[in-house]
Image 1: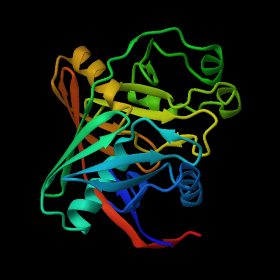
Image 2: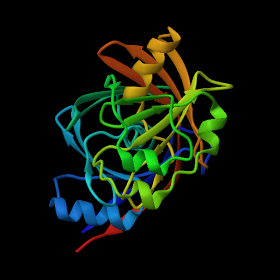
Image 3: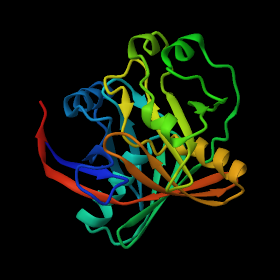
Length: 262
């Protein structure tokens, strides 16, 4: 069997920036074991699989280890493939996913995701995470992910978590977000996933489902600009709309081709 294959850099307007995702169109679902094997072979943070479902699309996301409940950058990458590369007739898409219906709309080269808001609540930091950090956070919050709040952007840039210590905890499907006010944007963050093959995720759209309501409330702003300060860097244009958030960004096509299975 031969399947189309796309690799897209998401949340960036520059090739080799943002977060790479592989996108595989399907006509019917393959066994879950095969989807996971393809994701492992692709060896990027997320591989998205989609198939037509009437006028909409079904969408699933796999890391090299597990199926995810929600992924922002791979959803953006999938929308880019459908709208920009496959020339879909509409610039507004609806994806049916494990996290419910997800809307994406394209305005020129900018893609806006409409995702569920996951407002975090105060939490106690697990010992393994605390011991892995070079500096303790000022605040600890949690939704799917632990949200650790620091004072400055420099704190975020200079953080070097001890992976061997952090890997003592399993947060599947969540991770650890460190965040602070930004110098040239409203807030910055980085994202770490214990026990995952890719320890630091370059740009994590789904984490912003929690970061947006937190920073919106703290800064008193509904529209915010965020940067994720991985080596690849990503820029996200964010909106807080109470029960939903909007997360917008650009995408660039890195590779197109096909894969053979079986």
